[in-house]
Structure formats: C-alpha cells, structure tokens
Length: 193
Image 1 (cartoon, rainbow, N blue to C red):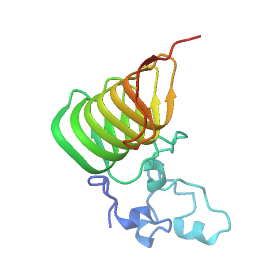
Image 2: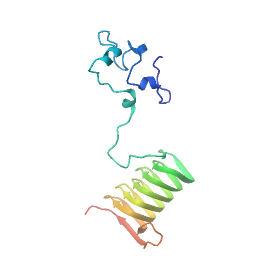
Image 3: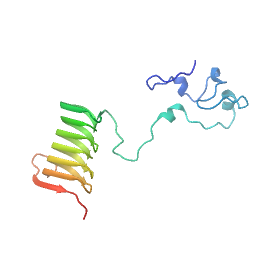
Image 4: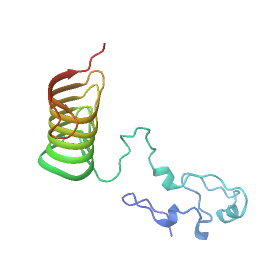
C-alpha cells in the first residue's frame, strides 16, 4: 500500500498506526531521508530503544488553548468577517462565533462576538463574551463578559457580569434571568479610575 496525501483531512489507518508494516520496511518516515545504515522498522521494534517520533495524527492536532472560552464542544456556527446573516432563528447551536453581522434570535450555550462582529436581535445564552457590539434583548443565564472594545445596548438580564475597562453597557439592565427581576435603566461605561 503506497502512502498518499490525505484526502479532505482523512488518513488511512495504516498511516496512523505506530507499527509499520513489512512492506514499508525500507521507506523513510515522513520528512526524513532514507538512511540505509539505520535499522529497519522491523529491527527497531525488536530493540529495547525506539526512536521517539511524532505520529502524523499527533502532528496535525492543534494545541489546546488555556482559555476556557475557546474550549468548545458540540456544534459551532461561525459567521465569518464580511458575512451578513439576517432574519433567522438559530437553534441547536452550542457555540456561535460572530465575526460579521447577525440579525437573529437564538438560544445557545456560548456566544462570542469578535471586535468586528455585531449581533442584533434576541439571544438566550449561558455565557456571552462581547468584544464587538450587541443590540437587542440579551438574557445571559450564567456569565456576561464585556471586553474593552465591547458595547451592549438594549434589554439585558444576566447571572454574573464582568465589564472590562472601556466596555459599554446601556439600556434596561437586570440581575437575574427571570422576567420578575427588577429592571434598572442604566448607562454604564467602564472607565479608568
């Protein structure tokens, strides 16, 4: 079986395996020249010291980030830069990443709006991270984070609130996600003390 380039990111199981087949005994590992004086893979497997090499699968996996916000699971919808998504209802989406403009209603677990992103409409979210702008009705069940470039306007209900220096929050703001929570009309801008 000959080694082939991956097709749409898929590799054949033989390429990913750690044990080389006898037909590959004289082939060099990817990216290394064939050295006839080096032991063959079948001889190397019988010796007590094996060379430490990174398998193609390990090399292609991205490094994990230390930020908990980037660790996402489930379904993710990314609206890229210069994209406008208008008049939709977004459902069954675990993570929404807004780099363009979205006018929609949604219920999700995590929403991230980048510095160039904008969201208009209504959203029920567990965690919202706003670097760009949000305008509308926002209900954040757990934590709302507004970064220094973020601007949130409209009716906002939240469980926890973090506003970074320079972040803006204005409109009807209420602690708690129930409809009976007291509403405070406010115009808050985090500035340096």
